[in-house]
Amino acid sequence: MGFLNKKLIIKPEWCKGCKICVEFCPKDVLDIKQEKVYIQDIEKCIKCGLCEIRCPDYAIYLENEQI
View 1 (cartoon, rainbow, N blue to C red):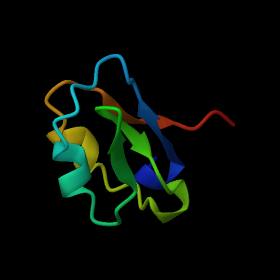
View 2: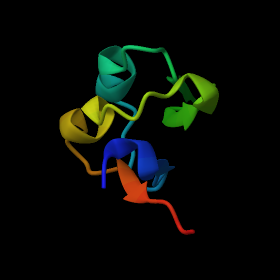
View 3: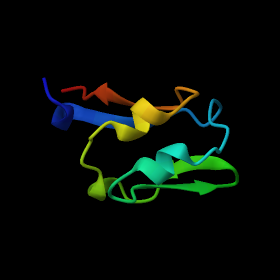
């Protein structure tokens, strides 16, 4: 199963607002609001996983889609 069958999940309670995921996202899907990451345009997401790999707090990750 590839990344295309995944959805982006954010755990805002774990996010420290470091912006690392925002900076590494190649499609500008993420942004920071009130010191927490949020998805500003999920349609742009290519599910590359860079946000998940770079997040030091495990606050953002790709999860298998439920069919």
